[in-house]
Amino acid sequence: MFSTMIQSIVDRFHATPEAIALVQLKGPVSFATLGQRVQAVLGLLTQQHPTFCVIYGHKEVDTVASILACTFANVPFSVVDASNPYQRVAQVQAVHASDCLLLGDSSYQQRCPESPTTHDLASLADQPFVLRRCVERQANDPFYVLTTSGSSGTPKGVKISYDSYAHFHHWYGALLEANASQGTHVNHACLSFDMGILDLVSSLASHQAVCMLPHTFNAMPRQNLNLLTQCGQACATSWFSTPSFLEMMCLDPKFNDQSLPELTLFFIGGEFVSPALIDTLATRFPKATLRHAYGPTETSCVTHAHPIRAIDPATLLSLGLPMGNNRITIETPDGTPLAPGRIGEVVIYGPQVGHGYVPASHPRNVAFGKRHGERYYRTGDMGYLDAQGHLFLKGREDGQVKWRGNRIELCEIETVAAHSPNVTHCAVLPVYQDKTVIDLILFAQLLEPSPHQQRALDEHLRRHLPKYMVPSAYKFLTQMPMNLHGKIDRHQLRALRHESSAITY
Image 1 (cartoon, helix red, strand yellow):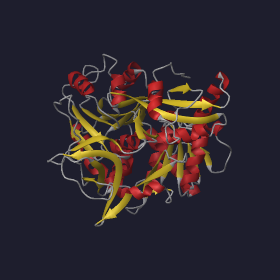
Image 2 (tube, rainbow, N blue to C red):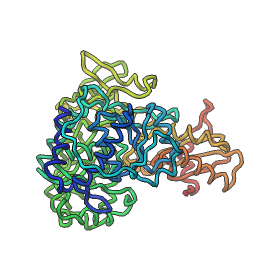
Image 3 (cartoon, rainbow, N blue to C red):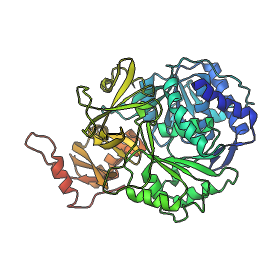
């Protein structure tokens, strides 16, 4: 099933070389141009025979070419976005025992130490795309490993096999093609996230071009809109993003069906979706289908994509029935299924479930299992099913939050902050607005409080954390409040949040 999907991309390089494959800030990129870069990377992979590639980049042509080349050559990979420091790249390489680092742009070379396994792809000459058939692969071979945060401060990887992704694409690709036989899908997510992978691979396999919005425009809706409308040959037809990014886009009154008349399908997921956003989108894009999307990274991108119709602001937004061959149960901690209406942990069964975490010793691997020959994943999400089997979420059971579409373990930020030499105590608190995390505030008690040391803590976090995990504000305390058990009193911290202004950098 996966081979058929990938072969459809290979065939497009030969059948429609002048057609637009990507729309980027520098202009449209044809299949012919992209194919030359893919073939150049394929040549490198053929010479080097790597067992695992780490790709360091954002949305450059060579970053995209690296993903496709690894896919065609049956080489598993993990993408590290260019917003991360090299220390993060080195951590990811170590976790996966990677023997090949591919740089999506020459500018990243200065961040990396010299190594025979580090390759500046810009130095590779274009090559005519000659690949006709992809390398044979086993269904359970790893397609990609998506690296997420880990509670120990060390990244962990989620292994997604070819077969797992193929089961996802089987139903998701059909939705894209049913919406537009030859359209353009809008990508906002970084390619280091599963949402970015599905934006790229499934769209190209479904006869779509991909419009790649750069993250430098995250707070610039008009710039994004200009990019979306500049290429008349590739009109935007479908969209996948977090609700936060859509809310940002809606700040521009021109983000509507007058500017984007072909945009008729929205997938919205990754965090809480507000009724106000649904109303705004329904007003601005009255012909569009809005789908409420859900699915942990560990279950190959998305398991639910429920059409949103009229909603009651006072009720939870349904995620509907699972798509494809996925099956959902609500269970107690010991695995006992709960009746409809009872709140418990959401457990996902089926072929989309990944094959666990890297390293194999990671303690969270207990969340994966097999029952009656069927793989399952205990999500940590709390929710319930109604009598029809529709899923409703109630929150998380642990210290994970969703912020700006990224899943973050708060204890990882605290672990890194605690390793700063001048920090004696610290805690991170999320700030909510309408069930959505809008800020992360780091409370810290310093050994030697001073503006210099306060800034040094911020610099320490930026060196050792991905950009999306750096807290948005800091509050420095002379004494961290403790509870009766000698632990940091987070309830008191919430009260302290309002007593003085926080520091931002």
